Figure 1 (cartoon, rainbow, N blue to C red):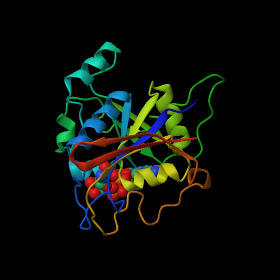
Figure 2 (figure 1 turned 180 degrees about the vertical axis):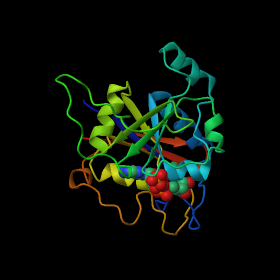
Figure 3 (figure 1 turned 120 degrees about the horizontal axis):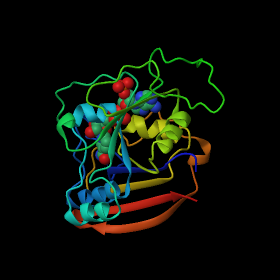
Figure 4 (figure 1 turned 90 degrees about the vertical axis):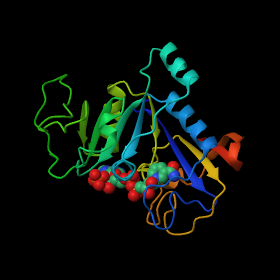
Length: 235
Ligand SMILES: NC(=O)c1ccc[n+]([C@@H]2O[C@H](COP(=O)([O-])OP(=O)(O)OC[C@H]3O[C@@H](n4cnc5c(N)ncnc54)[C@H](OP(=O)(O)O)[C@@H]3O)[C@@H](O)[C@H]2O)c1
């Protein structure tokens, strides 16, 4: 595949909400969800997180379980997957605890204002430089600037990202489903009914026709705390 494999990983309420009606930094999942979230992180080369989720939570999720850390070490992987923030504006407070977390950080500027639509001519065989014309945002070891998902995912694959866990929020999930780019949905159903407008895809989401059906259940697992893991893959 010319792009990484993408797995969306979310904790959702029984009524499909990602956050409580009042919004804010959602903490829907309990211990069971934490367990399977860490398993997904251990699987991934990188995680993708929406800028708004990062702003609200201040930090990214880390693997803590020793056996998962050992598994990654044995596979020659870094302890934590690369944490890539998706943003159009590229604006973050430098005081976020994220910038002190023990992980590698990447910034994916997708269709940022002023992004050159017409690229300068390239020599035969010369690769496009995704950071061209951009000053590096402080705190991020890697930075990509791309016109859309197709370019962005190809750049990430070239950078060695084969398995990508998408950690939300709703806007990020919606923009990927609009282009039928998710290969797997890993949802933890949590025993809460929240109401409000924060469904896990957002009310205005437009899902690509091909992504509307054809999901195959590959795992269902009862978790502690009355939670249920559901994993669906594209057929
Ligand atoms: N229950 C869960 O498992 C879970 C998981 C994650 C988040 N959440 C909750 O979800 C809420 C946040 O979700 P959200 O939908 O408001 O925000 P979000 O998806 O986290 O972030 C939206 C921002 O990400 C950037 N972005 C997303 N898609 C983009 C695209 N295609 N192109 C360019 N930039 C893009 C933009 O950043 P800029 O503004 O920088 O341009 C956009 O404003 C919070 O309440 C959070 O707690 C829950």
